[in-house]
Each structure stands twice: as structure tokens, then as C-alpha cells.
Image 1 (cartoon, rainbow, N blue to C red):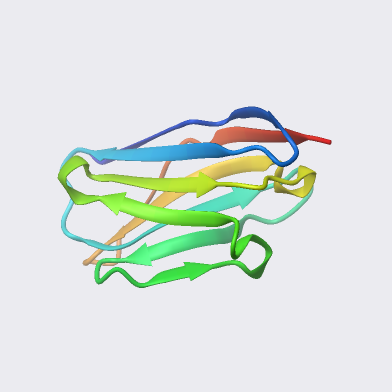
Image 2: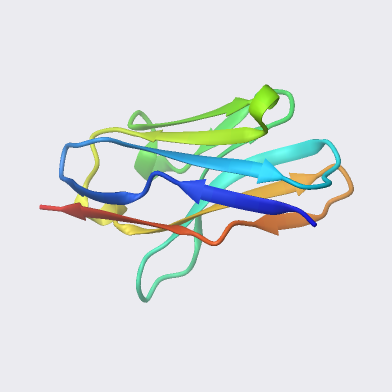
Length: 116
């Protein structure tokens, strides 16, 4: 069984920073892509950033220049460094991993709240 454990969410003032972590455990094949999504109340879940096995990074326009996705292969962990946070970044953030067989795994989500 594959498990994704997210951490690092919390309450922060606008302009502040948070670092999310997602540790992957269990029996998983090689990663194809690892990413972060978010879902705000009343809105659809959206891609925030992802990183391919080859290291290519993709960001939502709304977070470019403020968020950075990275990966530690030795720890099977993907990170999301979030700087210059805005109230509109408030959401539940989910980690997602897609393996080379195309199977998708999701974390349970971590709440990020940015106060104005």
C-alpha cells in the first residue's frame, strides 16, 4: 500500500512563507510525476506545481515566482516552498504522485490559511 503523508500547513500572515512536505512510503514503482494541488472552498481542485522524473517543473500562473517545487529522491519526499503568500492562496493542499504505470496516489491534504 502506498501512502503519502503531507505536513507543513498552517496559519500565516500575508507575505509570509510556508514549506509543505510530502513523504511517500510503501511499495511504489518509479515516479513519473510528483505534484501539489489545492482546493479552496467552493472551487475545483487545481494544479499548483509539479515536477517530472526528469526534473522538469510546471507552475500555475498564479504562483510563478513565489512557489518552488523540489524533490529529495533519497527521502522519497516532494516539497513546496511557498513565499509571499496571499489570502487567495488559502486552500487545502494535496500531494499527488503518478507512477510509471500511470497509477495516481493522493495525500490526505493539509490546510494552508493566509490571513490578510
